[in-house]
Amino acid sequence: MATVSLRNLKKSYAGAAQPALSDLSIEIADGEFLVLVGPSGCGKSTALKMIGGLEDITSGEVLIGDQVVNDFASRDRDIAMVFQSYALYPHMSVFDNIAFPLQIAKVGKEEIARRVQEVAKTLQLEPYLQRRPGNLSGGQRQRVAMGRAIIRRPSVFLMDEPLSNLDAKLRVKMRAEVAQIQRQLAVTTIYVTHDQVEAMTMGDRVALMRDGVLQQVASPDEIYHDPANTFVAAFIGSPAMNLFYGTLLRDAGGIKVKLGDATLTVPDAALAKYNLVRDHAMTDIIVGLRPEDLEDAALQPDHPVDQVFEAQVALVESLGSDHMAHVALSAPAVAVEDDVDNLEEVSMTGDIQGRCICRFSSQSKARKGDVARVAVACERLHFFDPKTGRALRDT
View: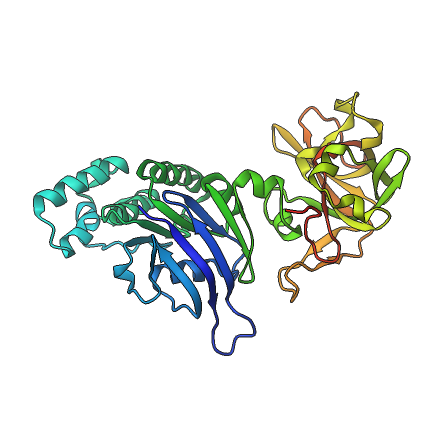
């Protein structure tokens, strides 16, 4: 077991306009499951390859335990890697595929047999040890690839989108299995994915990257409930957080936020969390509303009237337990661009009827064309600086 420290990692390629990775610093605890997530080209796989010794480091340091390993060959870093492709030997049995690293290391046959059986039991591969990879399902082949990594008993696992070749149903099953196996083995694991649901359900912590820059690293709950900026807010969550331009007002009744035709009172709980909001009174602001914090007011007759807005329903998607109601909010929506020079730049769409997604209970009677009253859990509103996109709080 080992800690992994990434200190000011940078990766630049000749002729590239900007670095592939900029000043990445993360401390990964012994036994922790850290997920690197972000859109394609954000630098997450580059970072993993630098940790694994498959990519040269332009500057900065990688430490495994207390040892700087920048100049170590991959084979000397006491790591094991699992990739998107299974990379199994088709002519060899499952037993021999798993045993291969030990055979190369000239471990004795009895010890190999014992350890393969141990790994096969952990991965539920015992019935398949004599089969060849071509006779296995995708999930079984991925478990064989993991077995080959596990049997080495490395200090660190590096996993680069290992489930992306699987169909949706199998991915759900396998991500639970991978997380369970990691916790059982308690091996420090760094896992790369572009799938934010995968990141949120598997990781002890999630590190979200964009254009080579770390945006936030935190527990799944923290990164969801306390996004550091508009990019994090928009990326994490399905459906994504609704982001709108609004104006903060102050009157005898306290702080209010005006979103188009709607005016909502901001409770003390939200002001305590976003403690810089009061400094922006009477100015423009970005307001974030999670779909699950927006309910059909007809189902909440006791909801405060100053935390409700009216909007026409443009579309209702039934998910069984929930209805995703798309309503037209008369406030400009915020578009968080992926390709801007300013990593936190936000821009106005120009569409005065911004689309707002609400997660209504299945008991809601709201239908397309109706004017619905939407109850807002205003204590869970999010506030961001319109110039920088950063959350309006000290930390």
